[in-house]
Every structure is written in structure tokens, then in C-alpha cells.
Image (cartoon, rainbow, N blue to C red; front, side, top):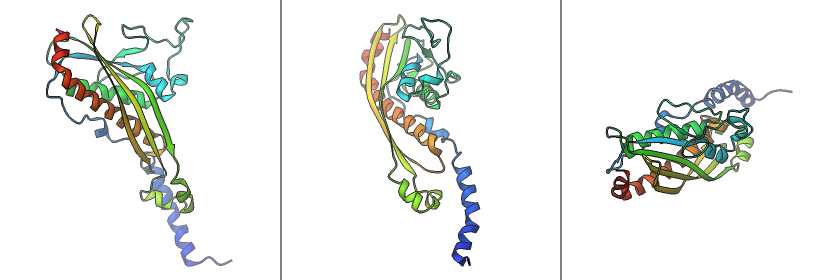
Length: 238
């Protein structure tokens, strides 16, 4: 059976397509993705950032493998008891959480940056703590692009056509406490993001990107509420 000239060209291109796909699928998220967008005009006094890790594990379905085990039958997951609940940890820009779920570490990194650069004046005296929790989540992949990908043997995907899309909607909860751990303010907003999966992000990374942007969207709405209530919050933190 003779092979046509067009078939020979495709066979010659396939190795290059495979190499592009291999290297492109491993590209990590952009570092500037974790940089906040703007600073509040009226900054709160210095607050220490905390994250409710179990709430994010529940949201992302990660509690079965990311929580450190313990021999304590009353606390089988080894979660530290804190004033704000088990597994609520104080975090800084150097904190590395014990978790296999990158989206939780991403949430901690985003929140610390927002608190230290956009919500609080870190040069002032510490007046309390600010806690981030995750509530309900909607997370769905749409594979409507997959049939076209299969029909073109993935060639168009290498040049930018999506493989599928992901919609993430996350309930973002922020609580502010004074130095005596009295609740001063609580905010609850839903953040959302739709991202497309392509070779340059890979199967997991585009969901990670959607989760990060959904969190940022929720935090942006909460920052606006904090800005609006800043005088009252400041008065309660004295």
C-alpha cells in the first residue's frame, strides 16, 4: 500500500506535536496570578492571618489524603486546637501547610498577600486576627471541546484550542477578631471563575487556576465590604 505525500507530512509532524504537548502540559501557573489587584484606601491596623485548612479540604475533597494522621482517637486527623477551631492555622508568607492539595497552599499564599499588602497596615501595632474559611463550592468540568479534539487528533489543542473548561464557584468567608478573640466582623461572598484546559496548563493546573481566581474574586468583594466598614472595624479593634 502506497503512502500519499500528505500522510508522509503528517507522520513527520507527529514527533514535533508530541514534544510540544509534553513540555507545554507541564507549565506551572504564572507567579503574577497570586499577586493581588489593589490596595484598600482605608487600611485596618495590623492583623495576623489564619486559614481554616479543614474547610478548604472539605471544599476540594482533599481530606482523605492531605491531613496528617494522629494516634489520638479523639483527634484522628491531628488537627491543632486553636481559638478559631481545629485545624485553623496562623500563616505567614513563609508558611507551608501540611497538604498534598496545591489549591489549599495557593489559598494561604493569596490570603497572606491580601492581608499584608491590601487590607492591613503592617507597620502599626497588632490589634487582632483575620481568619479565612471556605464554604460551599460548585466545581464542574465541561468536555464539549473533547469531540473536536478527538476528530483533529489533538492537533488544534497544541495550537491553543481548549480541551475542556472548568467553572468553580467558591463561598469565601472572612472573620475579623480583636486581640481578645472577640468576633468584630464577618463577611461572606461567592467568588467565581471559568477557565479553559489547554496543553500549557495540564489537567490539574487549569482547575487549580480556576480555584485561585474564584477565591480572589470572592476576596475582592469582601475587601470592598471591609473598606466600607473600616471606621466601625477600627473602632472595635482598639
